[in-house]
Structures are given as structure tokens and as C-alpha cells.
Amino acid sequence: MTVHVVGGGLAGLAAALALARSGRAVVLHEAAPLLGGRCRALPDGTDNGTHALIGANRAARRFLDAIGAGDAWVEPEPAGLPVLDLADGTARRIALSPAAWCDAARRPPGLSARALLALARVALPLRRDRPVAAVMAAHPALHRALVEPLVVAALNTPSEEASSRVLGAVLRRLGAPGAARLFVAREGLGPDLIAPARAALERAGGTVRTGARLRGLSLAEGRVAALDFGTGPQPLASGDAVVLALPPWETARLLPDLPVPTRFAPILNLHFARAAPGVPVRFLGLLGGLAQWVLVRPTGVSVTVSAADEAIEAEAEALAARAWGEIRAAAQAFALPGAWPEAPPPCRAVKERRATPRHTAGAVPPTPPRRPLANLALAGDWTLPALPATIEAAIRSGEAAARALRG
Ligand SMILES: Cc1cc2nc3c(=O)[nH]c(=O)nc-3n(C[C@H](O)[C@H](O)[C@H](O)COP(=O)(O)OP(=O)(O)OC[C@H]3O[C@@H](n4cnc5c(N)ncnc54)[C@H](O)[C@@H]3O)c2cc1C
Image (tube, rainbow, N blue to C red):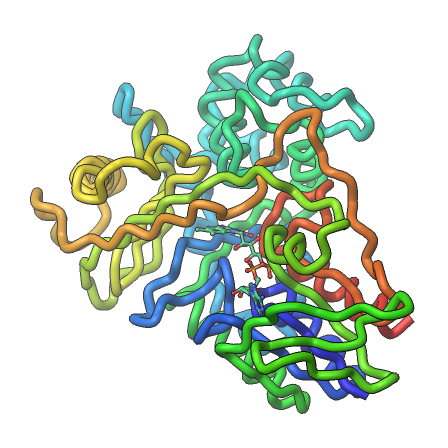
């Protein structure tokens, strides 16, 4: 009795690990040569994009501990995020945790009692779903300094369009102790997440097949009867089961009747080859420019642009020149160690056009059934549409798919 987990992103890895640890025989099939999906290391070791986790991502933090990678994720800015406003050169630290806002030095600008109340209302469940920018229109300073960057980072959707209901789900979880702490992989997604996840799965007895694309599946009597990886239909034994942990477009190709999201938002990452051995990992925010977040590691400097509808179309060289100027301003403002020459170092642009579904107000897609067929469960960040499509949603969905098949 084998469970075939199809898709080796984090949803598939979480499902496969949970099933293998519960004693099931598991084979994980991944189309690409490497595991990780939208959260992966490229063949040269560069992350496809900077991935940050917050303390509120409990399932993700538990998963890191379960694969022995908890200590590989570091908190680069425990005193609050350093944020440079490029419009006026103001440099300040901003705490993400509302509990820390009693310290005036870490409070976001524009945090009046009324603005706080408006934000608290967004966090109430069952409020009417509206675009976040419209909800915060009377509080432009707080919107610009805190709410918009948070929405763009967490929902990967422009604030003018983004769902206040999905933002509410994020805000409700930020109040708990430690929930707003921000973590990044010390070295990279390969060594600090995907390799340990694969090793943990293999230690639990799971098998990994890369370069194995599921071309089609055959259904009979409400069950998956066979899987076709390009060599013709391979019949399943009677106790066998399948977890499809695929992006929405692949799930729709294989199971056309399921409701899946159809609108996506891009993320652009620019990776500068600036080696600075020994420097601490840092994570800085920028307002009013192209770059939104800057991750500094000893091996390089990475810039993230989420909800990058416009930037994704621009030439990589022009993007690199602009972002490097902004990085240098931030490095100067926060006295980052090392040399920050005027000329940009070699830069690699990674454009993920379908990074996540768009979380548009009033358009929350229906939740697909977790187990649409007797021997098939679904996973993937998009299968929990009340949450932002993130590592947390992917891992939770994988673990839920494993429970659905066990139950
Ligand atoms: C640039 C970028 C930055 C991001 N930043 C963050 C962040 O800071 N924090 C955060 O929490 N989240 C972030 N995310 C979102 C996060 O990466 C995703 O939510 C998560 O990785 C989705 O995992 P998944 O397993 O659901 O899907 P995927 O990662 O898409 O996994 C699906 C897998 O299925 C494989 N596959 C597809 N078709 C087939 C087939 N027919 N047969 C076999 N295999 C197939 C794919 O190759 C892929 O490996 C970011 C995403 C991107 C792209």
C-alpha cells in the first residue's frame, strides 16, 4: 500500500514526511530536477527568491524543527526592522508586533488612535471584504509605512486590490507572543530547508523521484486507477493512494472540474554577487523605491519586489542599476559594514510570474475539497484560500492531506 505524493514543493514534502512518519510507504514524484517548487535553490545554489517566515507561522516553524533545520533560520533584526524611506531619507526601526508599539522608537509613523482602530477593525473576523487601501484611506501615513508593505509582502497583491479579509487573518495572528519575530534562512533555501526536508523524508523511509512529471491520471469508480508519468498508465493497487501537491494550473489540467485560482501575481528577485565573508545576516525594508526588502548575507545581497506587475516587464540591467542605488542608500543609512561600491556587482534577476495567486478583495475562491476522490487528497498553498499563499499554507495543506488519507 503506497502513497504517491505528486509535487515536491513544500506541500508535497510536508505531506510525504507526515505519511512516511506514520508508517506508510511513500514515493514523492517531482517533475523538476530539484525539489522545492516555488521555494527552491536554483542549480547554482541561489535562492529563487528571498523567503521570510514569521513566528506566527507555527506549522512552518514546527516543520523546520521536525526536519532538524530550526536553528538554520535566524532572526536578523530582533530589535525591529530597519526601514529607510527613500522619499525623505528617514531611517528608523519599525516593530511588527503591536505589543512593541508602546516603545515610541519602534512605532510605525502615522499610528494615531484612530488609525490603530481602523487596523484593529480589519482584524475582526466576518467584516465585509474590501480593498485594503480603501479601508485605510483615511490613514495614509500608517498605510504607507506599515500596512502597504505588509500587504504586498504577505499577500503579494497591490494594496488597492488586496483583500482586507485575508489581511485580517494575518493581523489576528500577529498579536501572540513571538508571532511577529521574522526569520530567514542563514545560508539559503537549499541547505536550510529543502535538503534537510529531503533527508528527513528519506530517513523516514520515503523515496524521491525527480524528473518525474505526472502526465495524466485515469479515474474509475470514484478513485484514481492509474498514474501516467510518460510511460503509459501505471495501475494503482487497491490500497494505494495519491496526494496531488501541485500548483493550481497543473491541478486543473489533471482534474478539470475542481475550482482553482486563475489569477496570479509575480515576484521579482535581484541577486547581487557581493561576497562579504563574516558579515552578519541583515534584513532591511525600503519605502518609496523599487526594492522593498534587502537581504544581506555573507555570500550576496538579494532584493525582493513583490506584487511586481510592472517591474517584471523591465530590463534586468535597468532594474539592477536602480535597486543597487537604493541598496547603497540603505547600507549607508544603517551603517552596514563592508564596501558598497557605486557600480552594481554582477546581478542575476529571477522573475517568478506566477509566484502566488492574487488575494483580491471580494474574490476569495471556494475552498476545494481536501479529499475529492476516495484515494486522492489535494495539497498546495492555494487549497487554503482564507490564508495568504505562503510556506505556512503549503505545509499546513500537506499535513492536512496526509491526515485526510489516514482518517
Ligand atoms: C519569489 C517568491 C518569494 C516568496 N516569498 C515567500 C516568503 O517570503 N514567505 C512565504 O511564506 N512564502 C513565500 N512565497 C510563497 C511560497 O514559496 C509558496 O507559497 C510555496 O512554496 C508553495 O508551495 P507548494 O508546495 O504549495 O507549491 P509549489 O512550490 O508550486 O510546488 C509544486 C511542485 O509540483 C511540481 N510539479 C508541477 N507539475 C507537476 C507534475 N505534473 N508532476 C510532478 N510534479 C509537478 C513543481 O515543479 C513544484 O515543485 C514566495 C514565492 C515566490 C515564488
